[in-house]
Amino acid sequence: AQSVTQPDIHITVSEGASLELRCNYSYGATPYLFWYVQSPGQGLQLLLKYFSGDTLVQGIKGFEAEFKRSQSSFNLRKPSVHWSDAAEYFCAVQSGAGSYQLTFGKGTKLSVIP
Amino acid sequence: DTAVSQTPKYLVTQMGNDKSIKCEQNLGHDTMYWYKQDSKKFLKIMFSYNNKELIINETVPNRFSPKSPDKAHLNLHINSLELGDSAVYFCASSSSTGGSSYNSPLHFGNGTRLTVT
Image (cartoon, rainbow over all chains, first blue to last red; front, side, top):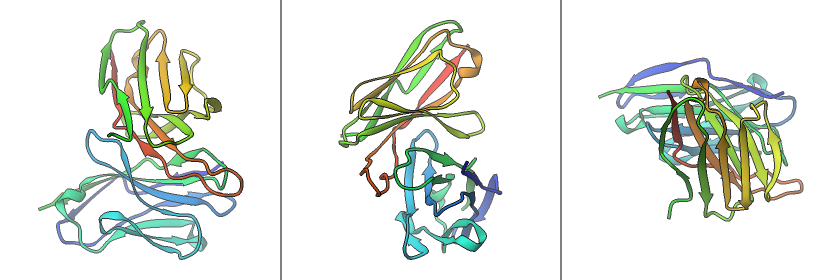
């Protein structure tokens, strides 16, 4: 069965600093990978997704993520964090075409120091 | 014009009661889901319906019963509520293209915070 690990429970960065949130997945074949963001009291919003092709994917709000098969990783990055980026971030894996099941990591809470 | 809407947003009730959460999507998606987010923010799928047919039914107590009257609605009914049912319940939807292609990403509602006292 697929699984997702987000090693960092809570990360604090200063506004304007760069950010990298880690995500490792476990799945036998090529996974479909996602990053979602959850602001307080809100549902989850899709930031970006990887299905195939270019391993560096661009998302909304200036986020990008890189798929590295050799490391089973899909880390999320942003070059300059804004205070409004403070939220909970979830990495998720869908086990291939035709699968309806999305498995989420336990999330990383991002705090931003003004 | 909310894409995935859930009602109510907050639900406070006593143990032993029966309650329902409603979900509607206007995205034209054919697949809908219920996820449970616990106090540690962990999200776990409970159910999934595709074209009103149950396709995912995780290990969930049978006190939880989803009902999908049509493709745009997936309601969650909970009988004999217990303290451990307190959580945030998220409805979501996606579009399955079928065949060899992938499902579209999930679109989530804003959640229903259930508190059982």
